[in-house]
Image 1 (cartoon, rainbow, N blue to C red):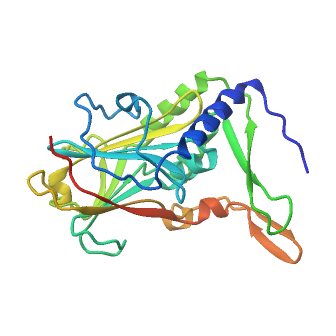
Image 2: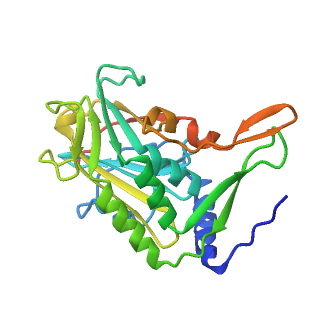
Length: 278
């Protein structure tokens, strides 16, 4: 098997992944309790208000996350540390489904659906390239489990700032469906409905995304503390329907393996939440 040399530039990213992986083992698969949002919460793509700690780590999607609320908004923060997961997020976005009737079906009529970022395939690939971190799936033998190998592209940390600028300049749309009083469409991140999103890469090349949605658009109210359901998902790149998708295959032992199966298969999970009230 071809050997990959890891440069010093990639070590901080590896240390960050190791630290978060250890923490993930201590967290539940789905958030267990309601949570009041910090008073100083800011939608800026950073977990500062949370001391970079999360309520759950979901193994299906390989995402850290926290859901919280105040009297007016529902908040979601998502954190990804694995390059392949980040690559998929940039390609298809993070989709949040909220069902105020407590149903767990992606086809339910009551679903309110929000997806961000909503990027073209070309722009997404350009952003990932500028993070300075590339990943590939290596399959030593047919039917073996794929291993993620990190490869340094010899990019400086200063290019993370370039990647963040590219992301900020190009991720101007939020895709919505089923929100009360808002047509199903893609809306600007500067929308009048006060739906706020932000996401950033840090110098360890991990990715953090934040979302704030007024409760009224989800059919929720702090005056009604009935339990509702939510779904967090990363759809297939093919389902994103953005045109050209790079997929590579390996042949061996008379079979064929999609080397990008992790990017091309959807992953998701359902949880339940009751609004927290101070």
